[in-house]
Amino acid sequence: MQNHPHATEAEALLRFSALSQETRLRIVRLLVMAGHEGMPAGTIASQLGSSDSRLSFHLSHLEHAGLVQSRRDGRSIIYSVVFPALAALSEFLIHDCCRGFKENDHAGCQPESCD
Amino acid sequence: MQNHPHATEAEALLRFSALSQETRLRIVRLLVMAGHEGMPAGTIASQLGSSDSRLSFHLSHLEHAGLVQSRRDGRSIIYSVVFPALAALSEFLIHDCCRGFKENDHAGCQPESCD
DNA sequence: CCTATATTTCAATACTTATTGAAATATTGA
DNA sequence: TCAATATTTCAATAAGTATTGAAATATAGG
Image 1 (cartoon, each protein chain N blue to C red):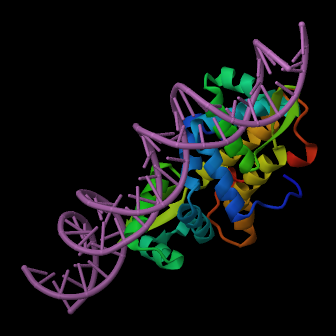
Image 2 (tube, rainbow over the protein chains, first blue to last red; image 1 turned 30 degrees about the horizontal axis):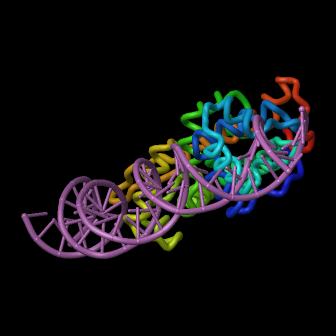
Image 3 (cartoon, rainbow over the protein chains, first blue to last red; image 1 turned 180 degrees about the horizontal axis):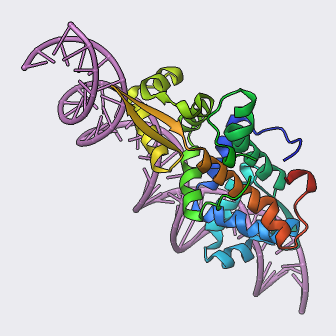
Protein backbone atom coordinates (compact mmCIF):
# COMPACT_ATOMS: atom_id res chain seq x y z
CA MET A 1 0.00 0.00 0.00
CA GLN A 2 1.22 3.45 -0.77
CA ASN A 3 -0.45 6.81 -0.72
CA HIS A 4 -4.17 6.13 -0.84
CA PRO A 5 -6.29 8.02 1.58
CA HIS A 6 -8.13 5.63 3.84
CA ALA A 7 -11.79 5.12 3.20
CA THR A 8 -14.01 7.08 5.57
CA GLU A 9 -16.06 5.09 8.03
CA ALA A 10 -19.19 5.68 5.94
CA GLU A 11 -17.45 4.51 2.78
CA ALA A 12 -16.03 1.49 4.53
CA LEU A 13 -19.47 0.62 5.86
CA LEU A 14 -21.05 0.91 2.43
CA ARG A 15 -18.32 -1.22 0.91
CA PHE A 16 -18.23 -3.90 3.57
CA SER A 17 -21.97 -4.09 3.24
CA ALA A 18 -21.64 -4.49 -0.53
CA LEU A 19 -19.12 -7.30 -0.06
CA SER A 20 -21.19 -9.11 2.52
CA GLN A 21 -23.44 -10.86 0.04
CA GLU A 22 -22.41 -14.06 -1.68
CA THR A 23 -23.38 -13.09 -5.22
CA ARG A 24 -21.74 -9.68 -4.92
CA LEU A 25 -18.53 -11.07 -3.46
CA ARG A 26 -18.38 -13.50 -6.37
CA ILE A 27 -19.02 -10.74 -8.87
CA VAL A 28 -16.10 -8.78 -7.44
CA ARG A 29 -13.77 -11.76 -7.54
CA LEU A 30 -14.83 -12.57 -11.09
CA LEU A 31 -14.30 -8.97 -12.18
CA VAL A 32 -10.91 -8.83 -10.52
CA MET A 33 -9.90 -11.76 -12.72
CA ALA A 34 -11.29 -9.94 -15.75
CA GLY A 35 -9.01 -6.98 -15.10
CA HIS A 36 -9.62 -3.46 -16.28
CA GLU A 37 -11.07 -4.83 -19.49
CA GLY A 38 -14.09 -5.90 -17.47
CA MET A 39 -16.98 -8.13 -18.45
CA PRO A 40 -20.49 -7.56 -19.87
CA ALA A 41 -23.35 -7.86 -17.38
CA GLY A 42 -24.83 -10.82 -19.24
CA THR A 43 -21.57 -12.75 -19.17
CA ILE A 44 -21.29 -12.22 -15.43
CA ALA A 45 -24.86 -13.44 -15.03
CA SER A 46 -24.27 -16.64 -16.94
CA GLN A 47 -20.92 -17.32 -15.25
CA LEU A 48 -22.57 -17.02 -11.86
CA GLY A 49 -25.78 -18.76 -12.87
CA SER A 50 -27.97 -15.86 -11.83
CA SER A 51 -30.81 -14.16 -13.62
CA ASP A 52 -30.13 -10.90 -15.42
CA SER A 53 -32.36 -8.85 -13.15
CA ARG A 54 -30.81 -10.29 -10.04
CA LEU A 55 -27.33 -9.53 -11.35
CA SER A 56 -28.35 -6.06 -12.37
CA PHE A 57 -29.57 -5.42 -8.83
CA HIS A 58 -26.28 -6.55 -7.33
CA LEU A 59 -24.15 -4.77 -9.92
CA SER A 60 -25.81 -1.45 -9.22
CA HIS A 61 -25.38 -2.09 -5.51
CA LEU A 62 -21.66 -2.59 -6.08
CA GLU A 63 -21.47 0.41 -8.37
CA HIS A 64 -23.22 2.59 -5.80
CA ALA A 65 -20.64 1.46 -3.27
CA GLY A 66 -17.90 2.52 -5.66
CA LEU A 67 -16.45 -0.97 -5.97
CA VAL A 68 -17.25 -1.43 -9.66
CA GLN A 69 -17.81 0.90 -12.59
CA SER A 70 -19.61 0.46 -15.89
CA ARG A 71 -19.33 1.62 -19.47
CA ARG A 72 -21.47 0.90 -22.48
CA ASP A 73 -20.08 -0.99 -25.45
CA GLY A 74 -22.70 -1.39 -28.13
CA ARG A 75 -25.62 -3.26 -26.63
CA SER A 76 -23.58 -4.44 -23.66
CA ILE A 77 -22.79 -2.75 -20.39
CA ILE A 78 -19.27 -3.66 -19.37
CA TYR A 79 -18.51 -3.79 -15.68
CA SER A 80 -15.08 -3.62 -14.13
CA VAL A 81 -13.60 -3.37 -10.66
CA VAL A 82 -12.47 -0.03 -9.24
CA PHE A 83 -9.12 -1.25 -7.97
CA PRO A 84 -8.24 1.79 -5.86
CA ALA A 85 -11.50 1.34 -3.94
CA LEU A 86 -10.57 -2.24 -3.05
CA ALA A 87 -7.09 -1.12 -2.13
CA ALA A 88 -8.41 1.66 0.11
CA LEU A 89 -10.69 -0.78 1.88
CA SER A 90 -7.78 -3.12 2.49
CA GLU A 91 -5.86 -0.21 3.83
CA PHE A 92 -8.73 0.72 6.14
CA LEU A 93 -8.43 -2.69 7.77
CA ILE A 94 -4.67 -2.84 7.70
CA HIS A 95 -4.44 0.59 9.24
CA ASP A 96 -6.77 -0.41 12.02
CA CYS A 97 -5.10 -3.73 12.52
CA CYS A 98 -1.48 -2.79 12.46
CA ARG A 99 -0.27 0.52 11.20
CA GLY A 100 -2.54 2.89 13.11
CA PHE A 101 -2.19 0.55 15.99
CA LYS A 102 1.59 0.82 16.07
CA GLU A 103 1.39 4.56 15.53
CA ASN A 104 -0.67 4.74 18.66
CA ASP A 105 1.92 2.86 20.64
CA HIS A 106 -0.25 -0.02 21.63
CA ALA A 107 1.16 -3.47 21.81
CA GLY A 108 -1.85 -5.62 20.95
CA CYS A 109 -1.00 -6.23 17.35
CA GLN A 110 0.74 -9.52 16.94
CA PRO A 111 3.85 -9.01 14.83
CA GLU A 112 3.13 -11.84 12.46
CA SER A 113 -0.26 -10.29 11.67
CA CYS A 114 1.25 -7.07 10.46
CA ASP A 115 2.86 -6.04 7.19
CA MET B 1 1.31 -9.26 5.36
CA GLN B 2 3.25 -12.45 5.75
CA ASN B 3 2.22 -16.05 5.86
CA HIS B 4 -1.45 -16.00 6.81
CA PRO B 5 -3.70 -18.25 4.84
CA HIS B 6 -6.37 -16.25 3.12
CA ALA B 7 -9.82 -16.35 4.57
CA THR B 8 -12.14 -18.71 2.73
CA GLU B 9 -14.99 -17.14 0.82
CA ALA B 10 -17.44 -18.20 3.54
CA GLU B 11 -15.26 -16.70 6.26
CA ALA B 12 -14.78 -13.52 4.29
CA LEU B 13 -18.53 -13.26 3.78
CA LEU B 14 -19.21 -13.73 7.48
CA ARG B 15 -16.61 -11.16 8.39
CA PHE B 16 -17.56 -8.57 5.82
CA SER B 17 -21.11 -8.98 6.98
CA ALA B 18 -20.04 -8.46 10.58
CA LEU B 19 -18.18 -5.30 9.62
CA SER B 20 -21.05 -3.90 7.59
CA GLN B 21 -22.95 -2.50 10.54
CA GLU B 22 -22.12 0.87 12.04
CA THR B 23 -22.12 -0.17 15.69
CA ARG B 24 -20.03 -3.25 14.99
CA LEU B 25 -17.51 -1.40 12.86
CA ARG B 26 -17.13 1.09 15.71
CA ILE B 27 -16.72 -1.69 18.23
CA VAL B 28 -13.90 -3.17 16.17
CA ARG B 29 -12.14 0.16 15.81
CA LEU B 30 -12.51 0.86 19.50
CA LEU B 31 -11.16 -2.57 20.40
CA VAL B 32 -8.25 -2.18 18.02
CA MET B 33 -7.28 0.91 19.98
CA ALA B 34 -7.65 -1.05 23.22
CA GLY B 35 -5.10 -3.60 22.03
CA HIS B 36 -4.85 -7.14 23.27
CA GLU B 37 -5.75 -5.96 26.73
CA GLY B 38 -9.28 -5.46 25.44
CA MET B 39 -12.21 -3.71 27.08
CA PRO B 40 -15.18 -4.80 29.22
CA ALA B 41 -18.53 -5.03 27.44
CA GLY B 42 -20.03 -2.33 29.63
CA THR B 43 -17.24 0.12 28.86
CA ILE B 44 -17.70 -0.44 25.14
CA ALA B 45 -21.42 0.14 25.57
CA SER B 46 -20.96 3.46 27.35
CA GLN B 47 -18.24 4.63 24.97
CA LEU B 48 -20.53 3.98 22.03
CA GLY B 49 -23.68 5.19 23.76
CA SER B 50 -25.52 1.93 23.18
CA SER B 51 -27.57 -0.17 25.54
CA ASP B 52 -25.98 -3.24 27.09
CA SER B 53 -28.29 -5.67 25.35
CA ARG B 54 -27.73 -4.06 21.99
CA LEU B 55 -23.96 -4.23 22.48
CA SER B 56 -24.14 -7.79 23.65
CA PHE B 57 -25.98 -8.68 20.46
CA HIS B 58 -23.34 -7.07 18.29
CA LEU B 59 -20.43 -8.41 20.30
CA SER B 60 -21.62 -11.97 19.94
CA HIS B 61 -22.14 -11.36 16.24
CA LEU B 62 -18.51 -10.23 15.98
CA GLU B 63 -17.32 -13.11 18.11
CA HIS B 64 -19.21 -15.60 15.97
CA ALA B 65 -17.48 -14.11 12.93
CA GLY B 66 -14.14 -14.64 14.65
CA LEU B 67 -13.26 -10.97 14.68
CA VAL B 68 -13.29 -10.57 18.46
CA GLN B 69 -12.78 -12.88 21.42
CA SER B 70 -13.88 -12.67 25.02
CA ARG B 71 -12.64 -13.68 28.44
CA ARG B 72 -14.15 -13.25 31.86
CA ASP B 73 -12.47 -11.11 34.46
CA GLY B 74 -14.47 -11.06 37.67
CA ARG B 75 -17.90 -9.73 36.90
CA SER B 76 -16.81 -8.32 33.57
CA ILE B 77 -16.48 -9.91 30.16
CA ILE B 78 -13.46 -8.46 28.41
CA TYR B 79 -13.57 -8.29 24.65
CA SER B 80 -10.58 -7.92 22.37
CA VAL B 81 -9.89 -8.01 18.66
CA VAL B 82 -8.55 -11.14 16.97
CA PHE B 83 -5.83 -9.41 15.01
CA PRO B 84 -4.93 -12.30 12.71
CA ALA B 85 -8.55 -12.42 11.57
CA LEU B 86 -8.46 -8.77 10.54
CA ALA B 87 -5.14 -9.31 8.85
CA ALA B 88 -6.44 -12.32 6.93
CA LEU B 89 -9.43 -10.33 5.74
CA SER B 90 -7.17 -7.56 4.54
CA GLU B 91 -5.13 -10.13 2.75
CA PHE B 92 -8.25 -11.57 1.12
CA LEU B 93 -8.89 -8.18 -0.47
CA ILE B 94 -5.27 -7.43 -1.24
CA HIS B 95 -4.87 -10.80 -2.88
CA ASP B 96 -7.90 -10.21 -5.06
CA CYS B 97 -6.93 -6.67 -5.83
CA CYS B 98 -3.27 -6.98 -6.57
CA ARG B 99 -1.31 -10.05 -5.76
CA GLY B 100 -3.56 -12.71 -7.26
CA PHE B 101 -4.20 -10.31 -10.03
CA LYS B 102 -0.54 -9.99 -10.94
CA GLU B 103 -0.04 -13.72 -10.57
CA ASN B 104 -2.69 -14.18 -13.23
CA ASP B 105 -0.91 -11.88 -15.60
CA HIS B 106 -3.67 -9.36 -15.91
CA ALA B 107 -2.87 -5.72 -16.20
CA GLY B 108 -5.90 -4.05 -14.65
CA CYS B 109 -4.40 -3.36 -11.27
CA GLN B 110 -3.05 0.13 -11.08
CA PRO B 111 0.47 -0.02 -9.69
CA GLU B 112 -0.10 2.62 -7.04
CA SER B 113 -3.01 0.58 -5.68
CA CYS B 114 -0.84 -2.41 -4.94
CA ASP B 115 1.50 -3.28 -2.12
C1' DC C 1 -38.42 1.07 -39.13
C1' DC C 2 -38.82 -3.39 -37.25
C1' DT C 3 -37.05 -7.17 -34.69
C1' DA C 4 -33.73 -9.18 -31.76
C1' DT C 5 -30.51 -8.53 -28.10
C1' DA C 6 -28.82 -6.56 -23.65
C1' DT C 7 -29.88 -4.65 -19.56
C1' DT C 8 -32.60 -2.20 -16.13
C1' DT C 9 -36.74 -1.11 -13.52
C1' DC C 10 -40.57 -2.18 -10.86
C1' DA C 11 -43.88 -4.16 -7.54
C1' DA C 12 -44.87 -8.01 -4.82
C1' DT C 13 -43.21 -11.20 -1.78
C1' DA C 14 -40.03 -13.45 1.17
C1' DC C 15 -36.17 -13.34 4.01
C1' DT C 16 -32.80 -11.55 7.20
C1' DT C 17 -31.23 -8.55 10.59
C1' DA C 18 -31.60 -4.90 14.26
C1' DT C 19 -33.85 -2.67 18.30
C1' DT C 20 -36.25 -2.54 22.61
C1' DG C 21 -37.04 -3.45 27.31
C1' DA C 22 -37.83 -6.89 30.64
C1' DA C 23 -36.35 -11.10 32.71
C1' DA C 24 -32.67 -14.44 33.46
C1' DT C 25 -27.89 -15.74 34.57
C1' DA C 26 -23.46 -15.23 36.71
C1' DT C 27 -20.16 -13.24 39.87
C1' DT C 28 -18.57 -10.73 43.69
C1' DG C 29 -18.22 -8.94 48.29
C1' DA C 30 -20.47 -7.86 52.65
C1' DT D 1 -26.93 -16.02 51.76
C1' DC D 2 -28.20 -11.41 50.17
C1' DA D 3 -27.86 -7.38 47.48
C1' DA D 4 -25.40 -5.18 43.91
C1' DT D 5 -23.07 -5.32 39.54
C1' DA D 6 -22.17 -7.05 34.78
C1' DT D 7 -23.78 -9.22 31.02
C1' DT D 8 -26.77 -12.17 28.24
C1' DT D 9 -31.12 -13.97 26.60
C1' DC D 10 -35.59 -13.65 24.90
C1' DA D 11 -39.85 -12.33 22.46
C1' DA D 12 -42.00 -8.80 20.05
C1' DT D 13 -41.60 -5.50 16.78
C1' DA D 14 -39.48 -2.75 13.30
C1' DA D 15 -36.46 -2.00 9.59
C1' DG D 16 -33.70 -3.32 5.86
C1' DT D 17 -32.39 -6.40 1.98
C1' DA D 18 -32.96 -10.02 -1.66
C1' DT D 19 -35.63 -12.65 -5.18
C1' DT D 20 -38.87 -13.21 -8.78
C1' DG D 21 -40.86 -12.51 -13.16
C1' DA D 22 -42.93 -9.28 -16.13
C1' DA D 23 -42.69 -4.86 -18.38
C1' DA D 24 -39.82 -0.97 -19.85
C1' DT D 25 -35.69 1.06 -21.99
C1' DA D 26 -31.84 1.27 -25.10
C1' DT D 27 -28.99 -0.18 -28.95
C1' DA D 28 -27.83 -2.48 -33.11
C1' DG D 29 -28.38 -4.59 -37.53
C1' DG D 30 -31.15 -6.20 -41.38
